[in-house]
Amino acid sequence: MMIKKIGALSLLYGLILTSTPTLANSSSNALYGRLDIGWSHMLEDDIRFVLNDGTNMSGQANYTDGKSYQLGIGKRMNSLIREELAFIVTTGNNPKIQAQTTVLSSKTDSMAVFANTYVDLQHYVKDYLIGYNPYLTAGFGLSRNHMDYLDNVSPDTGPAGRIQGNSDYKMAWQVGGGISWQLNRKTDLDLGFKHYDFGSIHSSMNDTIQAGDLRKPAVFNLRSVQIQLGVRYAF
Image (cartoon, rainbow, N blue to C red):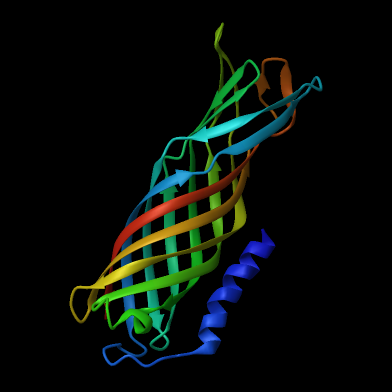
């Protein structure tokens, strides 16, 4: 994971150091706000946990698709670089796990604050994409991940127990890119494609499921691919 983070930031800052072109229509040091709504697809995850009697359980978590909502404030540092502080909420990514004869389902959500860097590539496409600005982005942050009760349902006997959920604070990161359209001097329409890693969330170990209490909790890694549509407005 750390290698991915370093690689993404190395790419961005490599572009920063190699050139900082001047754009005639860029507003230097301009503050802006942003509002985005997105579609979130959580990546599949292998889940393992151990019952109190020593039984090892494993299965794959498949998630329903969810939504994300983002607010942010940023500043253009020069014609190439923007720095941004963003708050994002992702909901509706609900896992379902088939582990041997056990079927577990729950609800998850994440709230996170990110410090993001954007590298605008408008200078390199301005001759044939007038008014369009492709960009790259990466950032680090802190997330609060929450999971509701894990309900256990046996295909043969119906409800078979419930595992208490939990909330965890984790380091998070994102990397991606996109393109924006300049609607007027102050307003840009933004379409972004990003990969988020919100860290993990684990269940409790004090509730009963089939053969007994959990000796080791079920741990979920919350990694999502998101498509976001939003508006940026320069103050």
